[in-house]
Length: 414
Image (cartoon, rainbow, N blue to C red; front, side, top):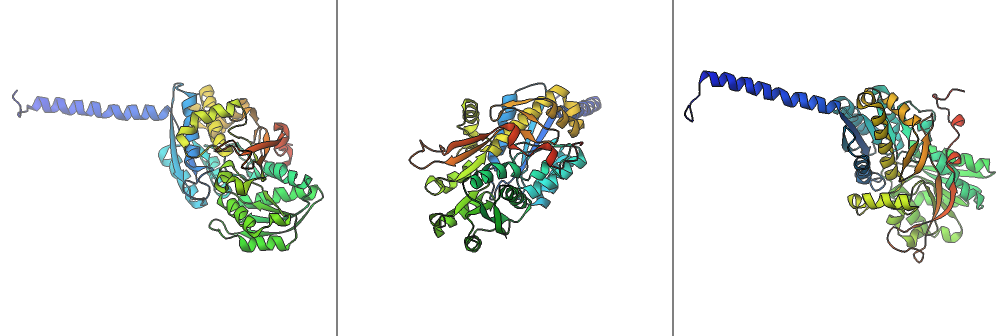
């Protein structure tokens, strides 16, 4: 047959071949999808919490996948920015699950978004591995069999940082509180510890979230209360702006203590040691804490530069790594079929990773590990970039988080 001519037989044969080859990618794609775990990193990729979640959290999730290695199934990591808006986060979560077949929702910064996504994961029977949202309600009144709260929560922060301030003589408080679920929970939990220790809460002011940058009027109200401690029940740029403006007003020079109830290493970096020195904060991970945390940081650092990992990023790494171990143990098909079953398997297995060491997951979904109270170094004490913390005290794992009997989780039978 010469070039440019075609016989009827060749057309039929070609059509049959095309049909056969056309079917192969579909079968291959279906088989691949059935053998692929999809993890959706849902957080603040562009706003006030970007440095403590954002791209660095995604880098840590990918590092966990790389460290887990090839174990007979594929893992895909998707990333989206929920803009700290519950409606945006909910829409993304539903689309990921219904359209893209996502099996796990990871990180989910901002408590209001996390609580909304929490309900969706329960409805759809998917896994919610939360690292960045702080509200202790995720293992309390809003607990579900689909959720593990990995890194920290408002009760832990209140006990560690708030408790330390009360013991140091800060027995009267005024709260500057971000007006959404996280701020309310942190104020509630810290206020409980202050009152239990014999202290008093003299007042509070709720600041609009997000979008507040000028905290001067709120700081004036706090000063007028004559409280010894101003408790910052906020996070991210809200916290750094409050601290900077309090320093400009000279509040600390007048003897008022600033309690940064949730402050991250990245916030200290943004403030600079000259401004942040002497502040105390609680984290459950610090890159320079021990040999294992340093090894983890060395592996992931290039992928997150110029940022550095804080506890929320570490929680994304550790949560993904433990989830993948559970998938290997139970099988991909079973893990994809039921988020509840996957979470139950994770709870049944002891945890161990370079960020948090050995640990456990309780029946209410609370991941258990120690917490650490740090003081920010002076510029003279720091040995170089990101060398910001000195350890003041360690709260053991069995004391760091709210007792399971006190949370009101419906999964706990009395």
